[in-house]
Image (cartoon, rainbow, N blue to C red; front, top):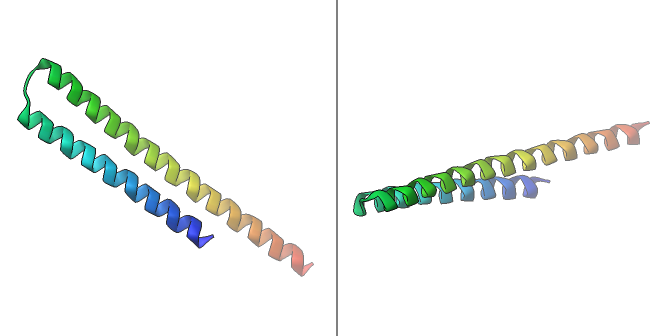
Length: 83
C-alpha cells in the first residue's frame, strides 16, 4: 500500500515538474519571439500547461482516495477477523 502512495506522489511531482517546464519554456519563447501568431501559440502553451496541472492534481486525488479505500477495507477485515 505504501508503494502505491509513493508512486502516486512521484507521479504528481512529475506532473508538477512538467507543468513548470512548460510554463518556463512558454515564457522564454514569448521573450524570444514576438508577434500575433506567436502570442496565440503561447496562450495555447499556457492552456496545455494548465490542463497538465489539473490532470496531475486529479490523478493525485484519485490515488489518495484509492489509498483511503484500501485502508478502510483493511480495517474492516481486521475487525471481522476479531469476531
